Length: 300
Ligand code: GRG
Image 1 (cartoon, helix red, strand yellow):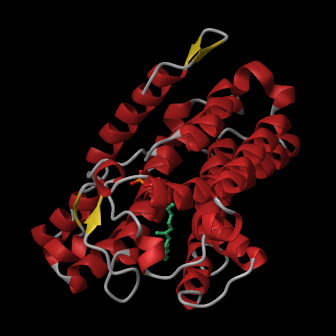
Image 2 (tube, rainbow, N blue to C red):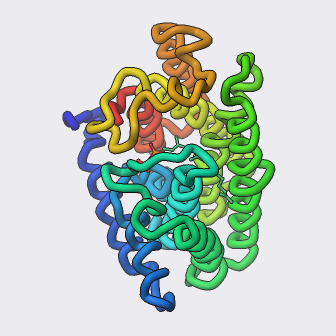
Image 3 (cartoon, rainbow, N blue to C red):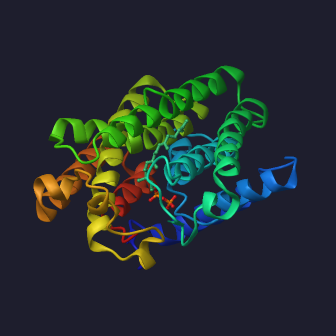
């Protein structure tokens, strides 16, 4: 990625430093799972790379709220665990039935369906363990709020609800409202929880939390619009997952409803809205502002 430097803030460097911090934390987050086959399947998907956007958003928002990012690191790993489990389950034959993820064969292709389901289950429950039992130094009432946000984002009010509507929408005409519902739940909910949980750990006040709620809703929707666009414009090699999947599965997408140009314009306008609400925090918000821009400029 080319260096993006604004007001002395080097975003490429920030992103890479955040990614390395998260990779290290993820590497040491598992153990002592038994049997070894379960541990291996969990590690296979958790340590397969990925942009690590959710944990980085969490750390950035903790810092914006005046917190020490290291206190948010266990929650940041928890977010990546929930995200990874959702990818493992999404790729199963009963769901999107895919064989390529993060540039490698999907979890069930390597370990079989049963182990993939259980590795996902173990990652999901480990995520809550990370917050409840492995977050030293954070007051219990803040952790409780984080657990609440993660529960809402992962369950029926979030990812699960979005996924159900998404699966039910294959091969049928879907209007823009339904598509927005799918995107906000299937993808937006966890991105929102990433931003909010970092701020909650830092003890953010209601004004900042409300601004971050608006910011994260907008970037969550923009993220999935760009995902829809990349599905038709990028290659499987670059994406690390099967390109053109939405077309094959006969899914309604933003490009299908609005065309490529208008979809891109909508994503950009959402990012503008997201950045607008953080204006009062200007300098301290540089990482979150740059992360919002990255969402529309990314190529994978
Ligand atoms: C969480 C209990 C629970 C169940 C999961 C399977 C399922 C229910 C939901 C599917 C959610 C899903 C796969 C949404 C797609 C989100 C998305 C855009 C993924 C790609 O995210 P990136 O681009 O991927 O951040 P990397 O690999 O970079 O992390």
